[in-house]
Length: 217
Length: 396
Image (cartoon, rainbow over all chains, first blue to last red):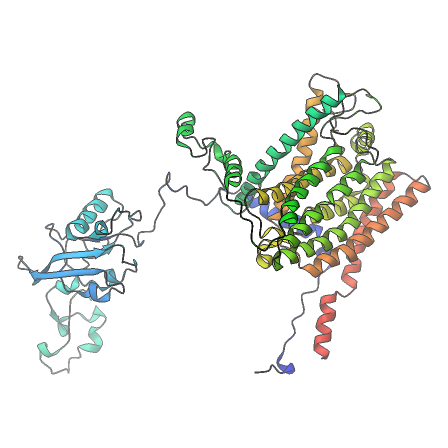
């Protein structure tokens, strides 16, 4: 489409005064800027000698969190595997040996080479069982070595918690909100945020018909 | 005997220049890093990363001082890539010309104390002493360096190299003129083209005899034009990476590339020495390096003073590189032909008037400043070609 001349707005460069026209003061000002940077301390981190200061939300190697009894928190719901855009999580579920949950992962394998470290698994997990740690220097000699199984992922949890680099970010010990007993929505307090809309006193449906939410929400 | 001394001096000076060149590259990278809030190369120590040397040095890094050695070795042992489409003879000739002309120009540049009227028997620290056309020789030879660039660009048979070479030839020819005009004033003030005599006059007259006091404008013109002559930023149009890949040295690799680099850095050293010699009194410094000072080690102090002055200008050139953006090509040409050359001519005329009527040379200082500010005033009044261009486009 041709541009009409009346639509073109010509922008003139700002007029330079005598001070700018002399150029030398401007050059000296520029030299002042660069020289002031020369005496500033460098922002470089000397990597192998100096550990980088990573923010706690850094997305490094995964770990599987433990609950207060040291059991794996995961309830094998497959939400992380479903959310994973790289399809790098492989879970085999089995009936849980413990009474407080239905399933647990018999195997839980993450292909660390395939993972793109997007953190979607962490966001998807309803029981806060999977987390990404600040471990960044992940190496291995073979591809097989980089398939992290359940024991390896749990040991990552033990290591990072013991080293203090990644304290459990989610509620330590307890399973996540999805594992908690369901509370009918009209029993929630008025301050719970969703209660005012969802559970009106004139609502005459039975409790089981109503949406249920955990008390945490 | 004097032949032997000259030969020894050539060997020492050439070796020193080549070594200093490689360390200047490290200094340049360090300067760049400091200006950009970085650390710069600090990994390669004198062990060069070799295991058996590492045991000797204990793995200490020496703040990256081994980097130039490692770089030099790397370039030496790199594969010599010669593209199929190049003109073989000229392709190999170009880097040789670059190094030879750059080193040859240094032959008449004093790098230490030279004989003065008070001290006529002093040892002349210059390879070829008492060359009466000294400064003309320097600029005649160093402008031969443009042949290296043009030959390199032409022989590479590559459009980017060719454009870089053409830009360079136009640029160097344009900037020769203000360079010559600014030196002309210095030569007139001294009455000689001999670099040793130029130093001797300034040294004899003391701190207030330095040419910078009479010719600050000539110094500004000289320094600007010299930056362009050495292809340094903000005038490095022949090799500007964003437009021309590498410019004239696009097709060069390994040791041939290093030779171009050596040529450029040797030029930089020569220009810095010349700035110190022509305008800042050479090896003279009040109280510690006077022509009459004869305490033990005075000679060494004088050499150090000159080297320190030259080093300051080398550093200034480097910091300027990381401070100023590159000129556009038409701006580059306009600066030379519309600003520097008229200013240089006026400056020469003023100096002629002052010398002819035997006025005090101190008249030159205020007149220089008036010329400088006057040029700025004219610049604010006269409309620039940019604006005229916009006016045309608006009428169309």
